[in-house]
Length: 391
Image 1 (tube, one colour):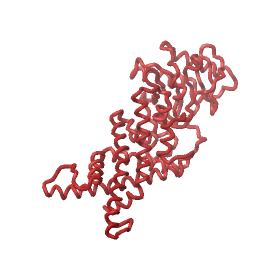
Image 2 (cartoon, helix red, strand yellow):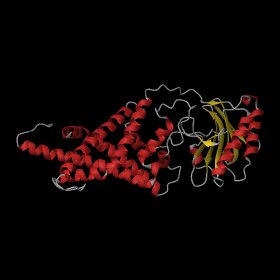
Image 3 (tube, one colour):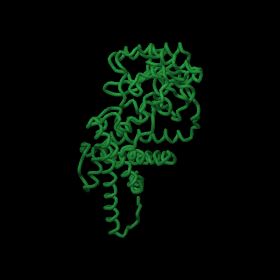
Image 4 (cartoon, helix red, strand yellow):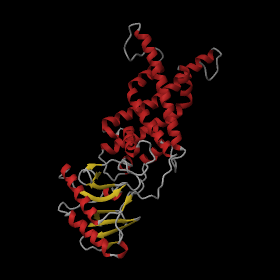
């Protein structure tokens, strides 16, 4: 085990330093934005939230919504949807049933958007007139140091292949290093315990070896959490590359006017039952993957997307039985949860500081491991043993 750990460490030292360095920089950028209360439209915050509300055509929330005003508190959603449906039917080009209907603010006016196939049209609710406006939808992440570093951390360039393969391989290497290292520690601790020395930390032996051992043990839980989640993401991303995806398939199906009315009413009722005072920025209804859904984009303290199954009134996740194939073996929801677990975001600031410690520990362990190897190699070289690898 010691030989495996030593030899692998030599080859992996720069890789671990790279992962620790880029991961630490990402976390520092995140903490800077969070602790200074950066606005939601800040590029770092947008990078943190990437994928949180789904990918592709699943989200109703758009970059525009991060700065848009909430709908007026007195908005009559029933009347608004009726006005949008009437405007939709007024033109012959819009005679086909819609794939989604929503109400939101556009250009400072209460407006409705309707999707027919791949076309989205907007209407002024008050006048019913068509609006010459760009349909609101999610757009690529804005440039930021955080986003660029994240792509480096994951070995991505313009495409995810072959970067995701390096991502998975790096996770496996880290696991082997951790398992072999903790196995050696346990054997040493067990031998000391038989002599009555049961303390978990001790500084006996050479300085670099003692520091390496203490830091590795102190950061063990954080390192194991990062290794598990990072390897899991690498596995899922690698799996994703072997799944054939039909990006032209539209998972939404047309709705009747009555379905639009009833789904909007259920969505509003369920949302108000849970959050009676929260402002609304967008209310959208659609049939997605066979599920009749209502989507709310909230205003107020934060912009969030909430999805409801309007048949049951229950919240819907990013992974439901009728949804199209996500490309991830355990579904989009699991992928997003693990991604935000990996960054610490899932459990708030305490977990983020633990994640930062894991990154710093990985940097230190990479350096101290090399220092230990050089010291040992020099000692052997003085005795004429100049081999780079030994048992």
